[in-house]
Image (cartoon, rainbow, N blue to C red; front, side, top):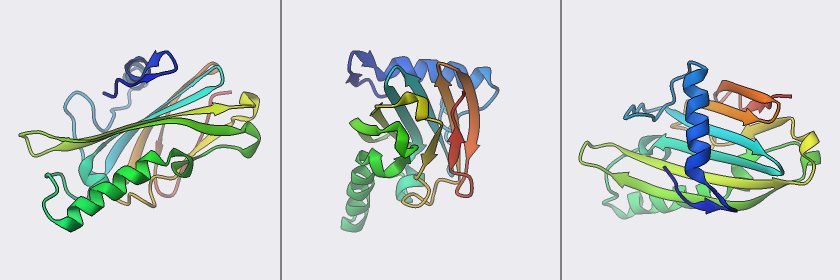
Length: 178
């Protein structure tokens, strides 16, 4: 899990809340408790005050097309490109323009290559929104730059409630609890 301190809140706090939400809703995250499934990733979303916090956990194969340490120059370039794309949270997520959400922070961890042949990416983003009343939906634009993601198990925790949805390349927008 990403443990970066984000304006006084640790990413692990959000992750713990989101994991409880996911299991409470009966949805299995793509990468949890050792489960690692290619084509699936998990997205945890929390709305708190003026903040919109998003966390992604995905097998490296979904983003790179491989899970081993990059060996060739082409694989090293693919890893560098994936990291750069993930750092640009403003391009990966859309919200209603009236919500006036601005990316404030991004944390991206390169994959950790374990002895089991599997590697996972973790990333988190924090947005500050000037008009939370207008924040009605979130669109994940991860499918075009990362076509290896086929299903995105998404858990949302907001002041008005919680929900879990599965996003796909054909359904990229989740309505937030109102």
